[in-house]
Amino acid sequence: MSRFSILSNDMDKVHSVQGTSLWLGSLKAAKNSCLLRLNNIKTVITVANNITLKIENFKHHIFSIEDSTSFRIIDYFQQINEVIEEGLRNGSVLVHCVAGISRSSACVIAYLMQSQGWSYEKTYYYVKEKRLTINPNPGFKKQLIQYSKILEKLQNTKSSNESTQSSRQLPSPRNIHQSPQDFILQLIKNNIKSPSRKIEQLDQSSTMEDREIYRFQLAQKLFAQSLQSNSKKTVQKMSDQFTINTPPIKMNICNTIDYFSQTDRLF
Image 1 (cartoon, rainbow, N blue to C red):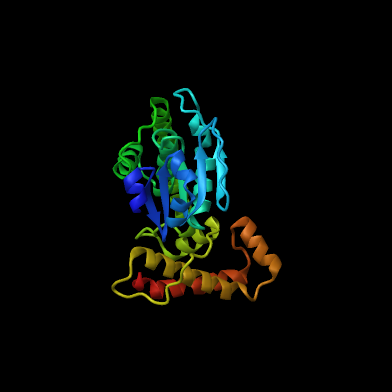
Image 2: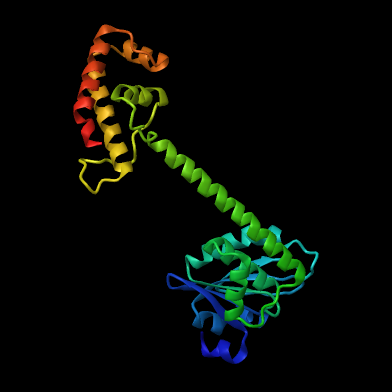
């Protein structure tokens, strides 16, 4: 924190990331170009209405926001978050209103909740510790809590989708009583795609997932070899019907099953 901000309390450093900082302050700070340059501030975000402010040689964004309990500040959070994020890639950012108490603090809290994945309560006290004077009006606080719940739902949905996607990449663990033949047919019917990583060999430290990937790789390799000599028509028919009818393919599958029976002890 610079000696200027300590003396005047015009602005305070709230958060730092990769050499750049997010500042929260007042209109007076935004007008002080020397203070801005001293703290490497390249972007100024004004979140206030009925003020005239012209800032030269800085990126300046204005959002007309009223300090009213009925004003829907939540409608501006996402857009302001994007501007802050873009600004931090080029230097430090100052978010300000008139006094640096209600509107600007609400916007900074909203940004940190989204970027850090924090709860409203944790974020509020985090910002409060950096700038003691913050106090979003009651309407803004309610909307921040609402925004926190929205972010939580989005995060839960994202985690659920990632979990589902991950489970689709690997075959289900093979039942201990499942025969190699059943396992191979299961791979065909499920149309399982190759895992994103490869296992060259198994050892005592191999996990269950490693063993499933290794087993899948063997099945994939053996089927590729066994089907290579068959016509495209036969391969397409087997893929469409999930059945194996021709004698040559039966013979190849028997060879594959025999191989699995011999190597199954690895699993």
